[in-house]
Amino acid sequence: MANHKSAEKRNRQSQVRRLRNKANRTRMKTVVRRVDEAVIAGSIDEAQEALKKAIPVIAKVASKGVLHKKKASRKISRLTKRVNGMTAA
Image 1 (tube, rainbow, N blue to C red):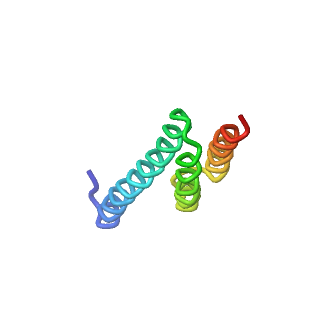
Image 2: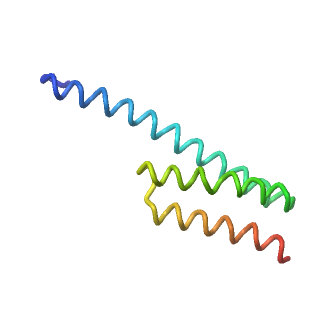
């Protein structure tokens, strides 16, 4: 346990940040799952709408440092590729 005043404050800050990061990560996973479900269901319109909502959420999570910027870019790219593959097929 923290003994110094500054260490106690750092501990409080870490807990708040951890919960905030967890909430952001959960939100991102939810929007990605909605895109995947729409793709599996085969509904092109729903997949495109879900993708439109997912891209800004993923980008925001990356900008907050919860997710690496390149990982976010790769995730957006792969989701877009899956949705665009539906329209081509």
